Image (cartoon, rainbow, N blue to C red; front, side, top):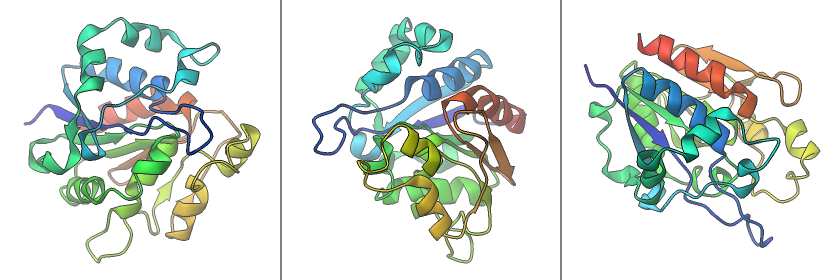
Length: 227
């Protein structure tokens, strides 16, 4: 059985036209990476178009930088993967054990329009393999479809970064779309915890986490599903 898991990362470094920087949220990358790496899985990084994956500078600062993040920053092999991820269009879904869509506000720019990402999620889900996503990364499921051609998330219980959390961080007026709103419009059965509290929702082989606090329980759920 294959032991390769594709971590899908954003290649978006700019926060729209604000002049601010964005990218991958480190905690949502580091905690699952450490757990799955320890369990013996090969972790492949991919981005839309194969663009380098920037880390969101805000996620490298207190109070957001946690032990797993410190660990990840000290792993030369993992850090090097960020510079040369594979192009999602070149990934063979058949060689993967699972796919994990990592969060960060950058995903709101380059995930929803990625047909390659949607196709990978579609293929993995159809094969009964785990499809996991966290926080803003859940928007990468927007171009994925079910067997009947409907949006993959239609009728599915999911979670993602909530509109309330966006407003509390004052992101809601700056981002190109709101994850909660976009997924509900596709027919998702949206669930959430209180702001910044952990929440993981499983529906079949679809596993989603609400926010950075959900990284550890989501990774544990994914590892359990992988058996």
